[in-house]
Image 1 (cartoon, helix red, strand yellow):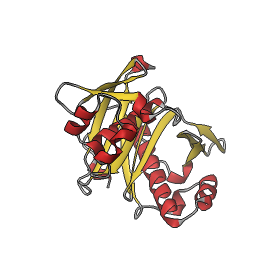
Image 2 (cartoon, helix red, strand yellow):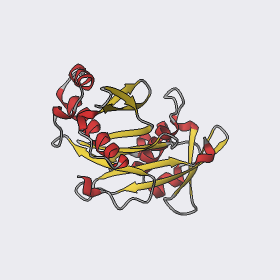
Image 3 (tube, helix red, strand yellow):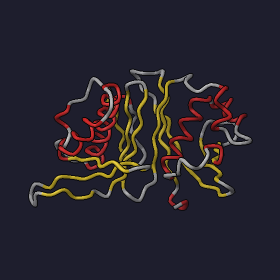
Image 4 (cartoon, helix red, strand yellow):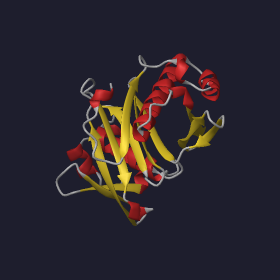
Length: 225
């Protein structure tokens, strides 16, 4: 499914994977242990697709033909995984100066990789999964008009990707973040978070093979760091 993404203009790489693409051979020993601890097969399949998409995005970003089992994604609680690369010359793993963001939806995983100094997030959902009954759980005061114009699912995806890009705590309510768009459009301008303005850019991703899925990548301006 890697042909789903348009030509990139942003300083990151993007990749996809499905549950049908995966193979346990791409895993390191530590990753295989993490995989085997997962409670059921659907979760394992989803997790594998996310790892494969992430490793594909990393090799593309680095411009290197690395064996996938020479890339290790080390999980972190409440944060995106760290990326380690196998150096066969010195026979050790080294921390790569990369940031990775991963999302899953309906047996499709999407991932982005970029340099460590960039704040980035990605999300994916099936169109129609977010309906008006759920607005009160994630819309801030003043967001309803924009959500109705943009569409509830895309609005959710953009907010989730923005959340990941900033690494916000789940203890903070989604309603604490108020997205803002350029007048009359679905083009993200940034967001207000508890009175602070943070400028951001979003890119909607359309999957030719799965048009019912809504995906987006959000990057935060350097000045917001």
